[in-house]
Length: 98
Image (cartoon, rainbow, N blue to C red; front, top):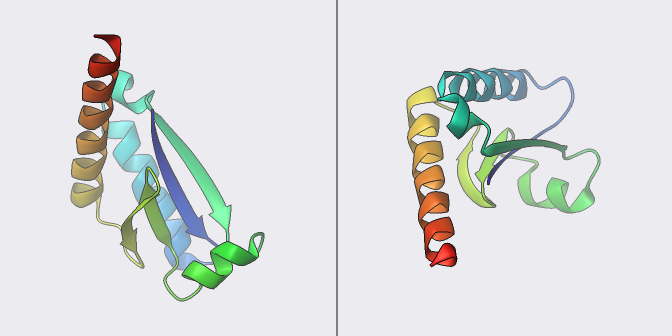
């Protein structure tokens, strides 16, 4: 399972655009791949630690806890990163089953 986290805040235009890009990219993936992605949205208004880390960079996209992008999310780069994360997950699962 790959976790994609979008960190933003309410009434943030760039956050809404980032969410739309994420939704579009995940929708374009094959169903089997899309089902392996968990999308989590978090607001800097709800978590002081998130605010402290990211307030000047939102929206922030993390893939499996690692920074992928901030301010602007591009579909091609996001798709490539998600596909890479999913391939990495598949390799890990294969090693664990051996």
